[in-house]
Image (cartoon, rainbow, N blue to C red; front, side, top):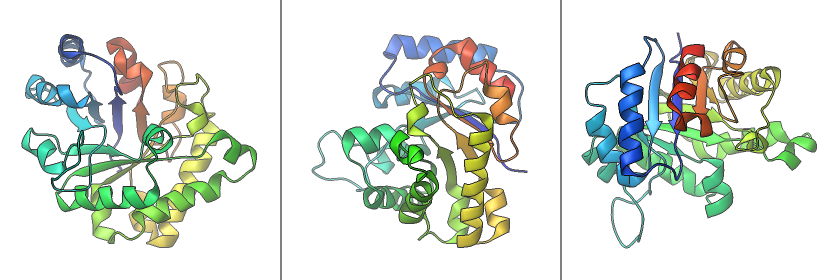
Length: 249
């Protein structure tokens, strides 16, 4: 049975007081579920989140990290800094990092290598732009993103990889891939991994859907056989909405 995960990417939202309030509410209301629950607050609130959730089943992830151990990289955060405060999950390759900050597959490969070397778990994001889907190039784009950043890994290293498929045209737009579109791409991703490695490994990889998941559509999306949960954006900032999505899985 693949691990089911609902992860909340808070992006650049919630100050310290708001973070503490939301974490407290989530901890008090968290439902009994077999799925893993993860939240990713801003860097400045990660240590607070770890302390606040010590007695909770909710885990903490970072939204990004640098590939270097240390050095003259102003404004950056290393894997060891995250591990030192108790964070061993990290989101890499989010579409906003790719589009707004120019992160390319070659850079993400370095980040993945560093995270895995430090025994961190990577939630690796990828997905096509609207024009790429309109041009019927979405499968090729997704396959290239996976190949370029991940297919150098040993099969054993995939135990530390969670995939998050994000159709970029459905992030923060209110648009959502239909459950059928999500399933089609998730099945393609699993097939692509199987061809590069083997079917057994492909069947074990957790693949999340990310793109305007809401309480109203989560259950239908999560019901698809190759969708193992979600990477949630805006809806993760409201306790009741996020926990409704958790319940939907």
